[in-house]
Image (cartoon, rainbow, N blue to C red; front, side, top):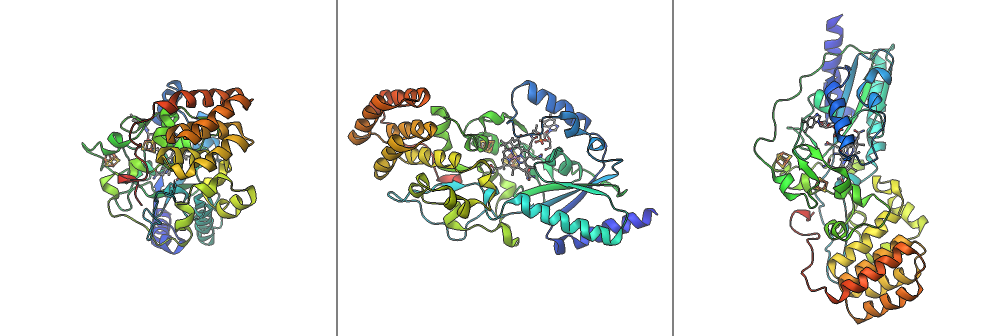
Length: 394
Ligand code: B12
Ligand code: SF4
Ligand code: SF4
């Protein structure tokens, strides 16, 4: 009997590439007891993003999600990290950047497809298979499962870092009733390196493998409200997500995975011109971005981030368009953010528009932003913040 499961596991690993899967490992389905303590503490310290499954019992006990689980099959699918022909972001034609996790088709769809293929492959061989698959939105911690299954180590930037693939991998898992032999977690680690912690723009990495999600730029780009001056400066030209702590990682050097057809980027979509984004309609947004993972919060956060990016570029040619947002956009957050951006760029036209808006704005938060912008506009003389340069280049 043991031989049956050993053989099945070996054949499954051999079949992985033909199923579009780049790495497979097996984790036991035992409760994640130490993770539970970490998650409790994480919550107590107020470091959650709010996007996690709130029920910590479910997060850490596979038996609450599946009747009599015997193993968890962890999968990793690798994605690209480089644009072959990146369009240039130039004065007069500034561009924003989507994180690599939003390049190509939505990874939830791609990994669900891979897990469905794996399930069909298993069912052919084991008709009594029971299985429950999840990617990102399931209750389990995908990283904790992958770590236990030996896919990679839990790195100081919080990512699962595979010695074979680096951290440019999406994770998913399938809880099963198959008694497959668990793999060992790998023993490699980050050593004395701290490049990711040093490079994090907002000091969100508060310790090795410890993230204060409420400061993480990836989280901030996905929020819908007004951001603070500090965070808006640090977002740079990121429109969705943040890759900095992975770009600087030496283990990722030279790693760029181009073999998964659905995950390859369209340069004009992932490094888009900023000004057209300010007025993009719902239909057009859906047509351009609906198939990507950046669309789940709608177009508003991306448009707000485009406004911020233009301010961070100090892009004078964008002043008329930003004034239109300030005067005509129906969303107060966009008007308030445009005020901030105009004050970053400065100039008489921007200042006059802010004065006019101060007399007409009716939303309290937007009005406060306009008043702060008017105070700031005289005193802007500092250099631009880091935007799409250095480690952010694609
Ligand atoms: C909420 C969430 C976010 C939040 C919070 C992220 C975070 N680090 O907590 C925000 C919005 C900020 C975010 C950002 C990103 N995310 Co996200 N996110 C999630 C989600 C839904 C839950 C993560 C979670 O529960 N975090 C809470 C922490 C405490 O637990 P954990 O990371 O799951 O588990 C680890 C820790 O507990 C740690 N740990 C355990 N014991 C101990 C003990 C000690 C002492 C220490 C220090 C640590 C430690 O080890 C565990 C395993 O690594 C998962 C999907 C899922 N269902 O799991 C995706 C997921 C983690 N995200 C993913 C990705 C790709 C990203 C981004 C790279 C996207 C981007 N480019 O912008 C960034 C990376 C930011 C970062 N540095 O982590 C991938 C990660 C793939 C990988 N290779 O690791 C996941 C797994 C989605 C997927 N299925 O592929 N994300
Ligand atoms: S994703 Fe960006 S902000 Fe978040 S921890 Fe990494 S470098 Fe810091
Ligand atoms: S940058 Fe260094 S410390 Fe950070 S994840 Fe990579 S190897 Fe680990």
